[in-house]
Amino acid sequence: MEKQIVLLPGDGIGQEVIESAKQVLEAVTERFHHTFTYHTHDIGGVAIDKHGTPLPEDTIRACQQSDAVLLGAVGGPKWDQNPSHLRPEKGLLGIRKQLGLFANLRPIKGFDQLLHASPLKHDVVAGSDLLIVRELTGGLYFGTPSERRNNGKEVVDTLSYQRDEIERIVDNAFQSARLRRKHLTSVDKANVLESSKVWREVVEEKKVDYPDVEVEHLLVDAAAMKLITNPKQFDVIVTENMFGDILSDEASVLTGSLGMLPSASLREDGMGLYEPVHGSAPDIAGQGVANPLATILSTALMLRHSFGLEKEAAVIEEAVQQVLEDGYCTGDLDVKGGKQVGTKEMTRLVLERV
Ligand code: ATP
Ligand code: MG
Image (cartoon, rainbow, N blue to C red; front, top):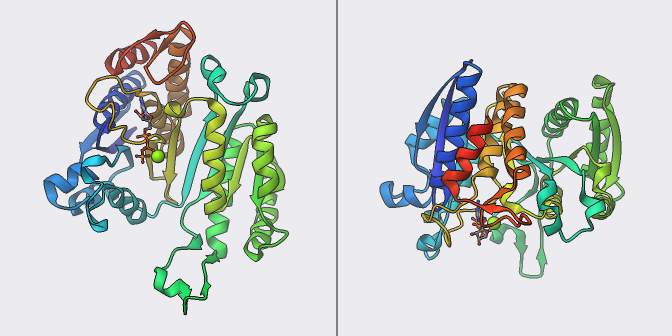
């Protein structure tokens, strides 16, 4: 298989973790005889410094012509005082919009060696393995504050969905469920929200096309509770934009290690942007101690969701699992009795197992 990959290292530890992830992708593609070509471009603070904008035209064009994008992180104290159009985050929001990414996927899987750092009881979180599929384009519409503050006495936010926006995210979630344990939980607030009633209708209509997937509906308040009392009941969760924003942060706490979480944002044709959930970690940037595993795991999502390369994705995930089982960790991970290594050594350990 031949693919064009754009790398956007961005700021802080982004540079270091992207280099690691690229090496892992290269090793996997070599093993399975695929040809991936890499193109590196600027985004965020580094792009502001070099080109005067967080999202240069050249970066947008390269991403649009690629099969997938791998992003490190953007932002840092250097640009904190910049005016709003010169904030590094504008680059990330901009590229998501330019690419028309509509589905955000966050797999939440605890690693046994790290679960003791979870605030929840071990027997509650051990074995939990779920995927949150969050709708990214509709939902609460953030217009300008002046439009929403009517005469200073009333304030209005609008939650709106096009039916086809719901249909495509629900289809996407059913397809992800098919790759996993074939259970889908649709989360809404259908007892009060009209948009949620339609959401539920769409799920009911769509499930006819996926008879092999078991479907359950849950109100968002109940879902928030069940996520921490019984996370093992979930396989794939699909939900609207803001519910997904809140639930995915809540769920990330289950694992006890934010530094291990990958994410994917997909376009309708399967093209996607992949990135670690963590930020640019300016406090440790350039020291060679950043944990590259979340970014390495993001490349596994790329192989699975953009290219349909399930076997290759599993090789990467198993290599990461194996490194932890063998007792290695980076400074941010709390592995009991673990041997602490830096970014390069951690990368080498993963490569060895790939
Ligand atoms: P952002 O606004 O970009 O999301 P943030 O302030 O939420 O940034 P991070 O940049 O993710 O947070 O960093 C939070 C803390 O976690 C920092 O102390 C950072 O050093 C640490 N951290 C984050 N990612 C990693 C990583 N990959 N390896 C090691 N430590 C990390
Ligand atoms: Mg953050």
